Image (tube, rainbow, N blue to C red; front, side):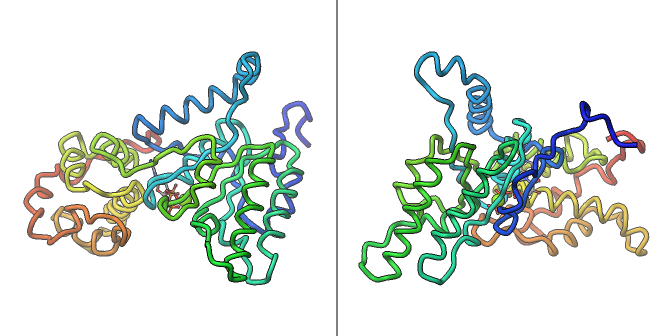
Length: 307
Ligand SMILES: Nc1ncnc2c1ncn2[C@@H]1O[C@H](COP(=O)(O)OP(=O)(O)OP(=O)(O)O)[C@@H](O)[C@H]1O
Ligand SMILES: [Mg+2]
């Protein structure tokens, strides 16, 4: 029997067929909330409040800002944050790798941008656009008069015009802030820095991805120290590697009694991004083995059914 229409959730992908060739549609129920520093957390909270207070803002001659640029190192949660924000607004997130809009044919990239924004305008329930790796389009304008330079500048102008005219919310993300054309940088209503996590955030991120294992405060403190400079993405990989080892190594006949050996196996299979600092845990094994052996081991596991 079909569900009564009144309780049926709206199909947030309705009308978005034409944008599927450029990107991926992420739905609210798949979103995670990123663990952020106070700065970006407050910026997002303010933005959400602003978007929900249209009438009050209009009464003083303002409109909610519709665009934001997220910048920061790889794996710090820019995509996760855009998805979370769209989910909080109950909207689908259309993520487009800016590179996918680029073609070598003259005029082709501008046509793609036009097609993308025309497609987005057909979203029946609205949507949020994430233009990821915007630096691949919006890098500093070429001043030379070559045809490549003219083409690139035309693409950028088309993008700026379409972002401005877009009736939904557009978020762009980059981890190469210094490559962006200043004109593009300025056109976004907000520029939000999403940086590498400090100690407090690393502790919370490690704890989140450790669940259902509990490393205790002492264990997490040690891991927080040893992961200085790590991105959230790397912290997630580390903790997921640990959980995999705790569950599977005994099955494979591998010993998990020595915590330092387990860590060594994981950190040799998961490497920090080449553009980011190398956290102490990834430096010569002898330098931190003593600290690792202080982690209460093996970690306790929450009973089944409890996170
Ligand atoms: N701040 C965070 N809190 C919790 N988890 C995070 C956070 N940031 C990233 N992650 C996790 O790390 C992974 C990568 O994150 P994400 O793709 O959002 O990073 P990004 O900044 O968009 O990276 P890139 O610059 O490479 O596009 C995701 O699986 C996400 O769950
Ligand atoms: Mg991303």
